[in-house]
Amino acid sequence: MSDKKAPVIIGSDHAAFELKEKIKAFLVGQGIPVEDVGTSGTESVDYPDYGKQVASQVSAGRFPRGILLCGTGLGMSMVANRFPGVRAALCHDLFGAMMARKHNDANILVLGGRVTGDILAVEIVTAWLQTPFENGRHQNRLDQFNQGV
Image 1 (cartoon, rainbow, N blue to C red):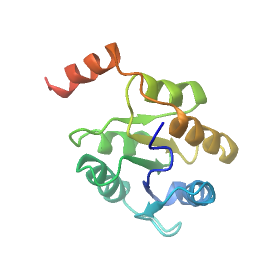
Image 2: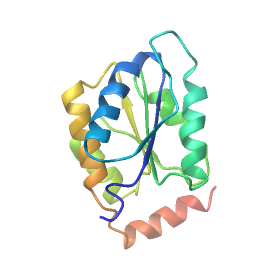
Image 3: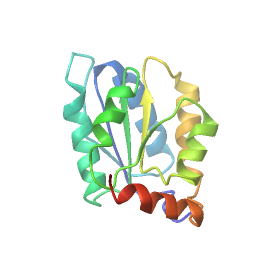
Image 4: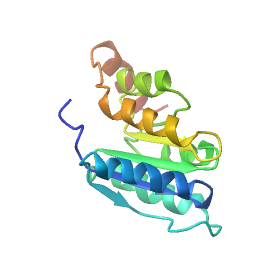
């Protein structure tokens, strides 16, 4: 896949700060440019502030992919999917990450810092980055939900 080394924008709240830092270090170690929009520590912050920053950049096409993290991943998923063209997928395992890419062309990966361990999180990120979108019938389905309600 041509965008395996494409830049990634990443953001988290306080609950997932430490996991964000580990994922960021992993990405940089793989030669993937990373834009970190914060947060910068474990002091309590409002997750929508960071979710909006990442999702708006992906929605505008400034970044092909983003990663969002909060305590469970639920709040970030809800925030991100409000933006046009964003397909944010909350993934807890490798199969979900691969299917989010293969069938849904997920452009934002969401992880829960309080529910996903460090090693698994890096494996999920790797699977998500390396799995291509299958197009075909799946593109037809994406077109359907991109048309709105």
